[in-house]
Length: 252
Image (cartoon, rainbow, N blue to C red; front, top):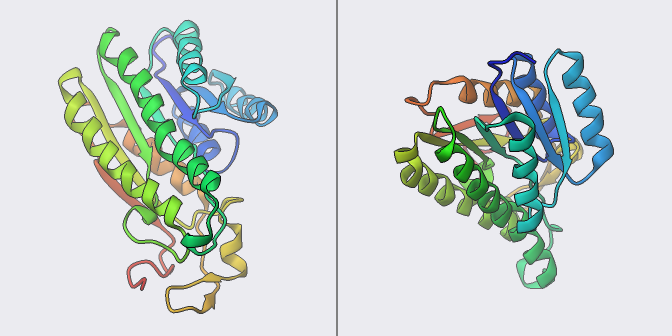
């Protein structure tokens, strides 16, 4: 690891967008703290990062648990001494059922992971970033194009992603005095395990089922790395990256 390597922490880093982003950052020389639920996946991603010549630290984490989140950031500080980037990526969704039929515990699970988790991680990141020398850093929140428009039967996911937009704006406002920049990346139909169902057809707003195109998830990682490499006096507040022909702009 180069002594001047910047330090990133990625949640949900064991697969999908988190993995792609961690690898993209590593290719640019970042050291990466990998947070996620499944230790074996974190270890596999860490091995890929180390093969690129960058440093990696895998930390099994439950982002919905304040003690687990505090321990994650404590381990990151102990290993690397500072934090330059937090990518709040971990997320989940609920079964696609009518809102009135959704079990309460499914609602709570999505809110805890998609909204409370990013809040808890942002709190710990801000504490580190405002007190380190040199001061400051960057937080990127994974929004989703569901932060703009819902899919059918997606109230928990859509509501939390709309809320992430408010969290992003609040962090950007409240933390600029600490030289902390905050932006949001809204992603549509990246080719991940979670989005694989798009290729076999998903419900549309008009009640039909349609196959939707996917894009290579590595493009999302590259977009995150672009946001991350900016100097702290510049910020991508919102970026949307999506499969060009997916039915979003005309959704509904």
